[in-house]
Image (tube, rainbow, N blue to C red; front, top):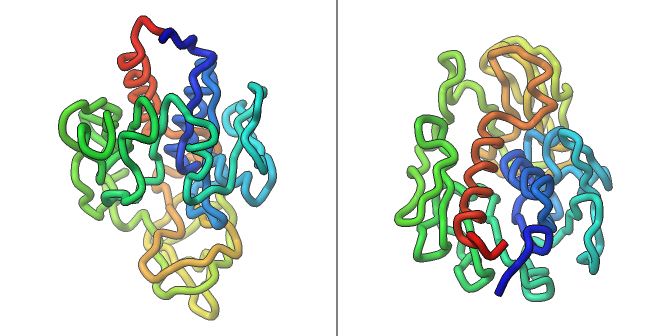
Amino acid sequence: MVVHLNELRVVVRGGGDLGTGVARRLFLAGMRVVVLERRFPTAVRWCVALASAVHLREVRVDGVLGKRAEKLPEKPVGWIPILVDEKAEALSAWRPHVLVDARMLKKTPPDTHREQAELVIGLGPGFWAGENCHAVVETMRGHNLGRVIWEGGAHENTGVPAPVNGFASERVVRAPVGGIFYPEADIGDRVRAGEVIARIGHQPLRTSISGVLRGLLYAGTPVRAGQKVADVDPRGKRQNCFTISDKANAVAGGVLEAILTHFGRNI
């Protein structure tokens, strides 16, 4: 069956920074894209995350508009709908041609399998081409970032972020305890090492390094101990906090390549 590019229905599970990069690229390529999110998104880079539409109702990221929707659109719209649908119930109703799992769980997702769409693409660790998806896109920084994998899986999760200006795990702020997250700074703020940027209850959260606060959970988000809640960029370029990253763009390119490779001359 021939499917035109503008007829391809794509569901992206997860509207964080990587999922947003993917959704934006596919939307600009002419595909019909829907993003599924949870009630309390965990995206720390919410200024460049379509997931923030869950709270804000609508958000514009690098020129593309996303709006929270209560149901699936029957006809193409000029923006990306974001649905609160943690169990992906929309899949059976919308029957997408492509499913992209961009939740970045970093472990094998129990609810993603190849039968959910003609082409199922998994981002990063936890996915195995030929088992729980058709293709995997590498998300680890380095030579293979954005590479499409048709056999095997992505590089396993090391638990340590890739170094930036010599800083790796120091860039990430994690919750020392579980509770409700309340920020005391804003994305784009310049912070110093040891500065308090948020609280969980009465527990202060401090940065380990100086730089620009690139990511921060949305106020009122429930968190668990050890969860990533903030991200400091030691490069100090404030403008980078409000645009899609090089990493997200590379991953998005890999997803687009996988779609064009799979559907080939039929689109």
